[in-house]
Image 1 (cartoon, rainbow, N blue to C red):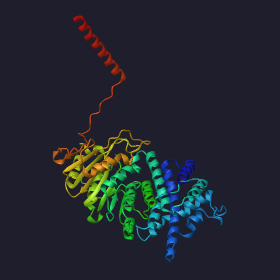
Image 2 (image 1 turned 120 degrees about the vertical axis):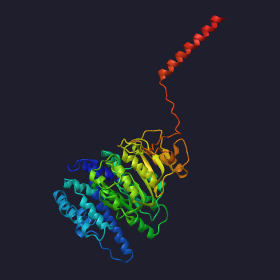
Image 3 (image 1 turned 180 degrees about the vertical axis):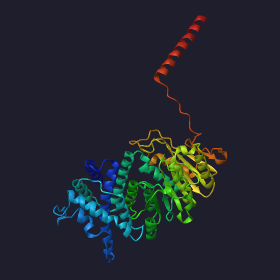
Image 4 (image 1 turned 90 degrees about the horizontal axis):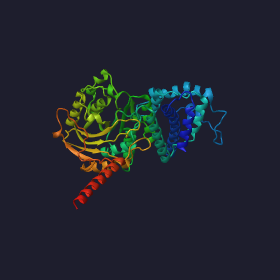
Length: 484
């Protein structure tokens, strides 16, 4: 039902003049979906309060509640067409009354870790792009059919929302900007193995895939006490995101996964001066896939001791600085980081090796990120002691990765198994840092154990060789006959 509803909503938005791409479809579906989700959440909270004999005060004022403005119903539960706004009336109400009302929540909320504040933030960043009030009415009617009451419904909804984010990533210039493949994220989390009570951070949060998967990982790691549940909800997951759309979708994604008031801030992480980061600002775990190939202006570069315009290299400096001593990280980065010969890359590799234990490098095949042709590696490191040995694993698959043939968890199972013991294999090897050239700190993933591939010969080449051998045999036979 969810899947068909999403498809029908996309079909409506496709014909609306205000929505021109998959990015618009996700953004516009998100705010309608969010208000329906909020309505179901309020119903659940009201029921829970009544069961304990308490009164519940609604977050949303009466005239702005879903069942009043969006889907007023008759006594038999059908849409009341006399009361339901449509056309220009609906569009005017949404643009000039609903959005300004919801936007005010940001200034009125008690603190930033409340759902009220997040409502205000979301509607401060968004605007309704659906130009036809008739199309908007159709979208509302479809979304109203969805329910978010049971765990199973919320799980299915979050899964399908992830699918929409993936499509949005594929539609963008760079698939990796919005969507990191979930099998890769799950594998990184398994290796880093965060624990309840640790603070987890992604400074390039995007659609919050790392934070959502880390929440699922910790939530299912054991039977949680009410205190641990509160710690997961309020004091575990932290993110920053520069782009408005990714920020909104990241918050929405976390809410759908079950984190009511996500601690994601809309800001440019790299605008923060590294020298200003204090112990209280640090985190136990960093999980991230910073943007590939971005370029930062000179004033942003001034915030970092190693000056470079390469966005990912600045992020890596930020992550090293913001980790607590003993903190763990799993960071995706372009594989050229391991071998680039510019001064900044060499200095950054030296900094990483001297300040952290870079214990594992996962070398990924091309096509891991759909729509992005770059090759990437995952750096796993712990802050506080210098690196002595680096264990590499090269993921060699017997197929090419792409949209219809994506990376799966099974592809990474051998890596997860071997990583625990860091054994050598055809795909894995270890280097000693004392053997690394100190003039360039080259850490290229050069597999010494990979078997040489035997090149397959062309059929004509084989036929030519057979013919030559036949001729050679005939000559030998003739020589023998002449001797007899």
